[in-house]
Length: 603
Ligand code: ADP
Image 1 (cartoon, helix red, strand yellow):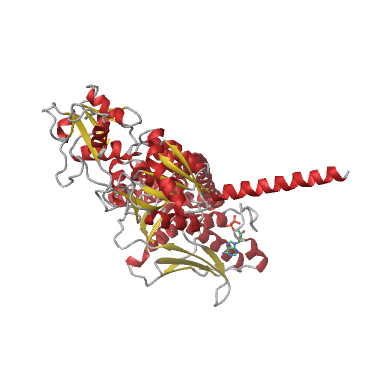
Image 2 (image 1 turned 180 degrees about the vertical axis):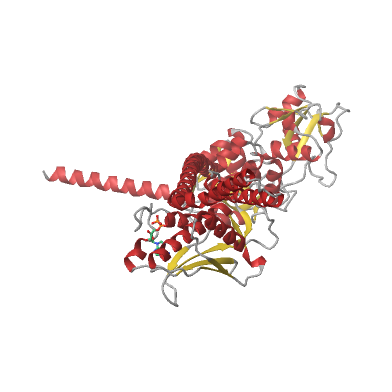
């Protein structure tokens, strides 16, 4: 029992110790990723001296070196596999944009201690190619490069070519990519597979030194005269960057930086300096529209849609909603317009029917007045006819008695003619009054209408009342826009009612007609001296078929009211202030001063 528990304890202690060592080991490891631009083995050879030096400067830490390609380095950062990395300037700014890495030091070379001018590219051609002297000469040639995303291995020269009006993307020159390691590019040029190749500055010289390349077989195209240590075709850019991943402990970064800055140059003469300004690299990428600036070349609808699709979709939605709304509004407007026009047509039809009914009523009313007056009318016509008969018989008698002087014949003939004219006049007035016709609007003198109507009633009634027109209005204040026949009809009704009322009251006073004008209107007041109205009568006065007369129709005043209202006026009945009787008054709009005398309007 005891032995088993002590062995268990021993086992537990060993496990805990192992775990602690593991943690300590893990925490002491510094994982450093490097870009293997010359391949894995070269990377080991190139960076192992740095690893050893750092481990000496950072006691207690083990530097774990891992080499990657361009894409792998990005993936390693994504997976959190490394705390630090070393890569070329172009790759650095891409990873800075994508993964938020920050540079802590820039590599300088033995020949260039300025960290901002370290990396450059050389375009190499076979030495015997005399036709290739300048970058411009590469226009129709074949160019080999290691990869399209290699900074010193391609992008730097790509920019140089563009600045000289050449565009490798358009096949000027025709570019092929050999893949890493970079010496493959030199081999392609040497074998004649390409006319020119892009190498990192100083790589040609190094390959020649190491014997990997026959000396003098290749030469650098248009080397810059201001850079003496190697043949360099391009401008110089900042050196490689030593950068910390986003999650790296700042204290560790500081410790590594301190170590880097104090390192002596390696056997290649390379050392580390304070971080350089990578702005020229940004400018180069912007110029080429690659890396973080790749979006600049995305001007097609596809890429715009990919970038702005939420806005585009929103806009599209708004347009669709707006389109549907517009269509719906259009549809509603069309439907309402149809409804409105059919309602208007219906209303027009009804108005026509009402007007036709009104005209029929007017006509019937006039006939009714004539019917009411027919007894006295017969008497009125009888008079001239009897007179004509008398004159004719008297002529016959005188002629038989041989007593017919020419003077007596002339007198009798004149009387016969005048009496027949009188009868014809009475019948003419009645026919005109009774005829059926459409309504019109004319400018007429109100006093004239009153006179004409009193003439008409005088012709119709044996004992016609005296109609007294009282007015001091000048002629222009009496011009009204009316249907003259309808106003005559109104006046005739009022005169006839006044006469009936005065007959009932036994009054033979004249019927008074007063004209007045105010506010652009002419007022006509017809006053009689009859019994007037009781309040009960007044309440029903204008109702259709209301009558107190045994032979009355009760339509007269209701039609008068309709006619006056159709003329834009009102008909009122009031008791006179100065004695018995009744006043019926109405007003009509005065004609404009320049209105023509005749203004037909079938409104
Ligand atoms: P009608 O003359 O056929 O009766 P109206 O509509 O012209 O029809 O008149 C309606 C009624 O109003 C008359 O029956 C009468 O009682 C009354 N009336 C109209 N005018 C007068 C008036 N001037 N004085 C008194 N009563 C009147």
